[in-house]
Length: 496
Image 1 (tube, helix red, strand yellow):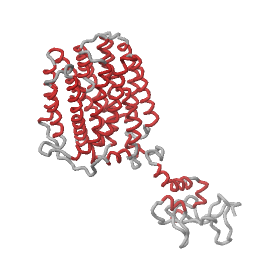
Image 2 (cartoon, rainbow, N blue to C red):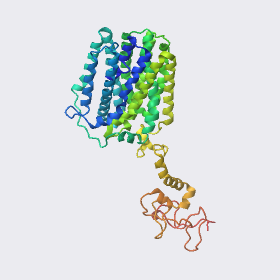
Image 3 (cartoon, rainbow, N blue to C red):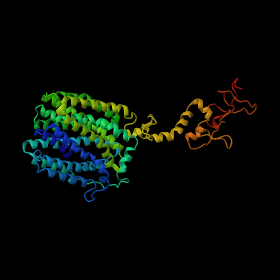
Image 4 (cartoon, rainbow, N blue to C red):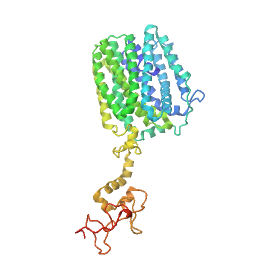
């Protein structure tokens, strides 16, 4: 709740209402990117913690208490001090985020993460109602001190009675684990291509919403009620629905459905961008925008599935930080450039980024399997039918190329006769050369059955003649795999 208030939520709205320029707000939001460096100390959070208060709970409590240090400051008159303290708090809240993510992963199994991520999204917007709805309303009526007291108490209460389960000491620690994470199948493609594309458009239009409404003549109270209360209530419903949808449709389809829904809904904000914020229409559009924000639920589920159990906090934090950093970066740039280029152009750019995210999902997200991990897991039934090179490194492809080539050749009917019968058969005579197909396939044995000569067809014992191509061999039923299914058979006319 506190990160949203201090970053892209209530505080920036208060500062803009008090006369701080869009360029200054853009610079202020850019400073919060420091908190996104949390992946650098995430392994330390996984490793160290006070057992008396709970491994991750101890980090959460320290962060909540630090929020109270903002209370005696004036957000505009002491803007320099507020900025420094917000930077410190963002570092602490980055630590809080790592601890929260790690707890979330530890308490859930893989099958329930889609639904649980929907609940987490809903809970996040419930925090939005408090951080930017209730806090803005209190600030508008009473002032800064009362608003910050509510924020500090509301963020500390959930942790007071929470009892964390006993921690599991991670097997791997340190920054090397982050590099190892990117070497996992599919992780680099998700973290460096798909995830940034999905989050860029979201950051572009969400950060412009409150400044556009203020310039269109809305008051802080109106924004607090419509955006942070009504919008968040709808987003809670969307988050709760997005979990089962992701579990039912699979991750790829869910990302496409939510992405296309954003392309349909977000252009409705162009009326607000041009200064025409008619209350009823604008309220409907804002609620729909918050409803399809559930796209982040599917993205979070993918990132959570790709993490490793023994480094839950650092892995998920590293992946989620990529998306959040892109969202914050695009949002800060949009806010700073809005004063120069105007809201309509920046909103159009955000819609273009949303379209690019949908296209990236179509091109780069595997089609098979309910999740990215199952699509890349060669032992999973969901991996059947996927390209054999998917998720494999160049070194692995080069290493396995001879084996793959042999399997491809052995599968051709015209070549099987040259290479010999399939693996699982033994030579007729001792010392016979094992057929290449058997060596390549590595089926693990030559028990039972017979083995033809590799270069000459079998001869008739009486005449010494060899059958022509396509003729049956005496004493063997065509297609029989064992002696039990064979029997005397006379050669067909013209075959000998």
